[in-house]
Length: 315
Image (cartoon, rainbow, N blue to C red; front, side):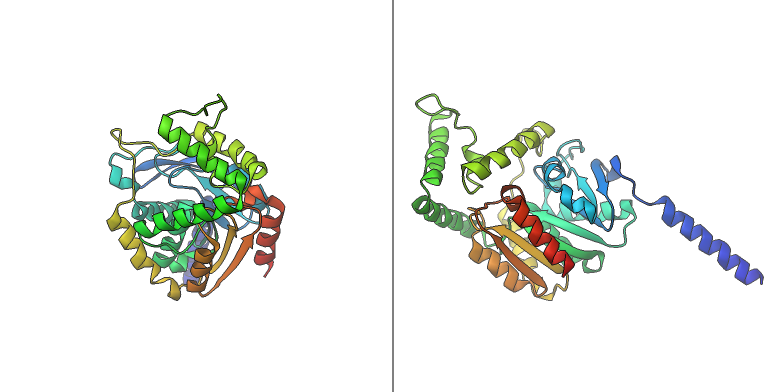
């Protein structure tokens, strides 16, 4: 009888510990990897983490609200972005540390398993996390992504994509001309005095209509604060770090995690053929290509993208 009573006490204690670690909606700051990391919690359901190593959380917090109906969304400012603390060394910005950041945040949240939303550079971090911690991941949504090559291959792919789009779209050809003029003349105005400062953002989008949707979000990202320099130096991926990731990609064939890849057909940085290659390397993945969208399909073609997301989640 005493033994049964003792077990009941222990069980009650464990339940109380579990309840006290329950994540609450609102804004929070926790020490993660010896840095103050800021995050916002919204919604209900399984926990999904979303942030970005160079742009933080605000853009996703503004645009992924429909997912809050199905998930407890944890939008976080990665180290050095938004309201999160800046690390002391430039090498603290590596992908390896970004993966570590996710794992330590998962523990802080008291979550046994998490979902991940990985967009652009964060997609590689999400996949690397899944390779290193496969038992901690319930599922992944990827966007603005592809199977990565060497740094030189990435440059060549971008040239190929640009040239292809220039031939197909007068609008995009003008975007390239404006960007080239900005760089050559160190200005944000063309020779007629027109503001062309948004050319860099437009490069990532499908057309003028979808670009304006993205530009509004990018302005808020800039206000919140992008990844900050350390000693006036900005982080750049080294060839050695790219090589490490290429080795990690070889392990994708062993990933059993369910993954949705949802890319824009006109993502200048991620041609559909390389998104398809990523899909073929991930055995439990589904690929959706959204027409008339670039790097931000859930912003550029919102209804179609969330319809596809909901369909996959139901499946």
